[in-house]
Length: 320
Image 1 (cartoon, one colour):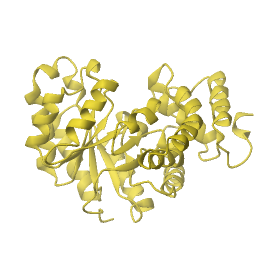
Image 2 (cartoon, rainbow, N blue to C red):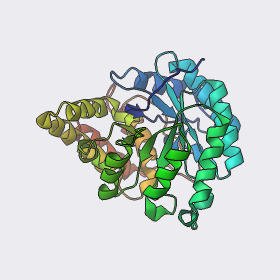
Image 3 (cartoon, rainbow, N blue to C red):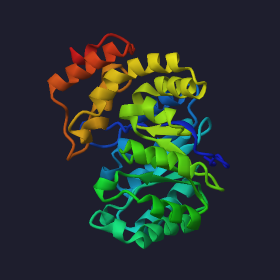
Image 4 (cartoon, rainbow, N blue to C red):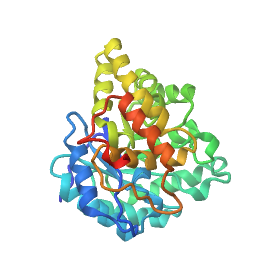
């Protein structure tokens, strides 16, 4: 599948989930069914695979290549595909980038290497070298994933600006700084550069507030479940229709509260369970060390779907 050239990372970009069989092998048929459902959402601008929502931390290089290949085969003729570059080492990250470009991805989502967590912020040249090595491996547009500063993996704004100046292929950041003051500063600073860099929010727990600050899009795993509501909210904010945005936000609120409750690491686990409840996936299998949610939490997810007025394909039979 040839990539869609000239892709500009803006708008609503859902990050889809990856289905597994009970033996933890990839369920391609169910994943493709999920991809097709999300891709049919009016108004989305792309789809992301091989990210956190795909449990990329638990995938081999060969599995990442396979996921990208069948995702392109399923929806690549309709939408650009953004593929994650998740690796602790820069050489491996460059290898993943070359593979994604060769397969037909339209852009890359560049994760910070976990190896920088213990003080990498004090050595900005490490981040610059990591992203530069990926950029040297491909001409694809890059989306830099901005983590919370407190995690040890977030880039100080000064580092981001140096990175953007040194690497012209950076076209956007996926902003998960988790700090409203810093988030707005990212939006105002990066989008006003002589070569503007788009801010794609992933603050899905407070999405309406984030979008009203002026982000040019969103990239979110919650789009695997509520892409249509995310599009509607994005469009209402762009149209400055506050009343419509508030109505949509009222529907999103119960699911935002459910998805991003503690422990935070279960967010995509919860999204899978919602897809099962909605009849959009057969199983909510996650790869270890993630484990299945307890029945009481699945019931809370069912209640959140009801409150959000999201209708299942049939009855909530999966929870019975």
